View 1 (spheres, rainbow, N blue to C red):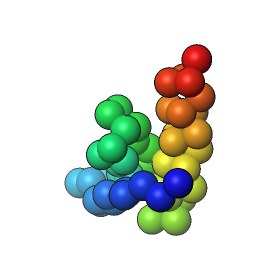
View 2: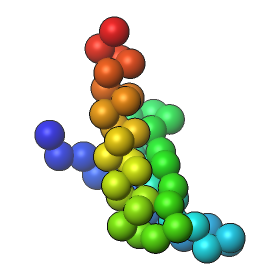
View 3: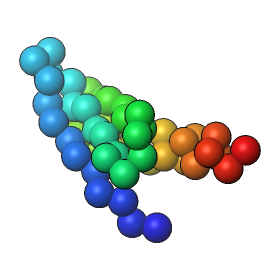
View 4: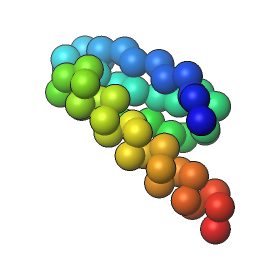
Length: 52
């Protein structure tokens, strides 16, 4: 499954990743790569919750 992920850097320097197709599914990280890794985990959790 491919999902569009938006990544922005906040004023504190953290990268915030959000999946617009999955309401409330977002994460953050100190680096862009960390934010992407964290949002992948968030997507898995989001899908598990919605399946239940």
